[in-house]
Image (cartoon, rainbow, N blue to C red; front, top):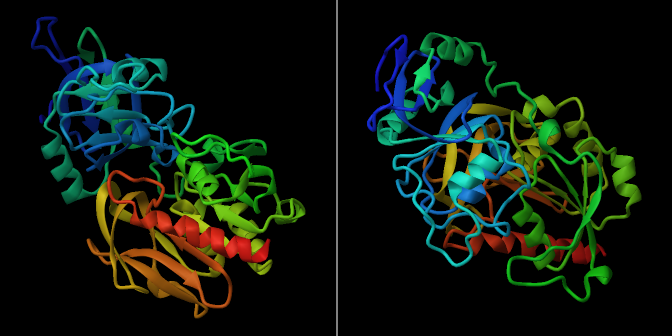
Amino acid sequence: MTKNSKTKSDTHSNSFTGIIVLSDGTVFEGIGFGAQTDAVGEICFNTSMTGYQESLSDLSFAGQIITFTFPHIGNVGTNIEDIECDKPACRGLITREFPTLPSNYRSTSTLIEYCEAHNLVGVAGIDTRALTKHIRDNGAPNGVIAYNAQGEFDIEALQDKAKKWAGLDGMDLAIEVATKKSYDWDENVWGKGKPQDYASRPHVVAIDYGAKKNILRCLVEAGLRVTVVPPKMSAEDILALKPAGIFLANGPGDPAATGTYAVPIIKELIESKLPMFGICLGHQMLALAAGAKTKKMKLGHRGANHPVKDLETNRVLITSQNHGFEVLSDTLPKNCVETHVSLFDGSNEGFAFTDKPIFSVQFHPEASPGPMESKALFDKFSSLVKGVA
């Protein structure tokens, strides 16, 4: 980690070809891989030991550069079945070790090949522990990640680019990554084919704000028939599809920035009294529609090892999380009750209406890096929907 203002490397074996420049001038030098380009975004860290491909293809990471704290990234390669979206929206990735060659029977390409195919820039060989501590102490910074095979970088220009980037606070990214037209979804979880009874199942509408594919798969696994619609589809048009339930998907950006379109639509749908289930951004926007408030977190929660207490059962769930904004539990209206809380920092992780079959969680029950107990939330939603259908 240095504070250089400008640098140019030689081409010998220990020269650096990748660089991270933070808006405060802090510089990390490493080895570039993937696309030879530069990208600006918010630099965050992810503590998961597995699932790097799912993270890179999670649209909730739009506008962000992901630092993986686990050192061995690339060891299972990449494949088409585990992606969460067809085109990743993150800006780049940072790793401790250079991506390893894959050793997994499901791998169809290396991580480096995946990055090259999707124009993702990566930098390896930096002290990710030092970068993580920097983020922990100062909050998630704006920064630029760059790869140049000649090792030539104008650090002052890169720092200026990082400084001028607007940041995620107030940024509406959901509208950029969400689907532009409706479609039916019938794909099941990995290893299971399309259900034979699919056409006769209870119908739910999933509003897409950057939905992960595995969430949609889990809805199918829970016994539902799914139609995915754009975030600006009106409540009237959604209800015209005659759903027995509404699902509010995850997505990137500031939930308050959707206040001109998504939140008003959700308010109308709440009045339909249909069962409703929200995850991550969907959880935050549901809270806004109910009258609560959200705010940007200093660090956010990103990883597969976050303990969450279920206040209804007093059980502790080990959850996967990916969010940089939180619902302020003390702003929830009287007809809503907090159902889940983070055991890391006490932030809200879920709430439910007391007078309607509506609930949501901040974490990701569809992500199962080991623990799978939170998947029961899909069955809970399915039961509510089947009670209406």
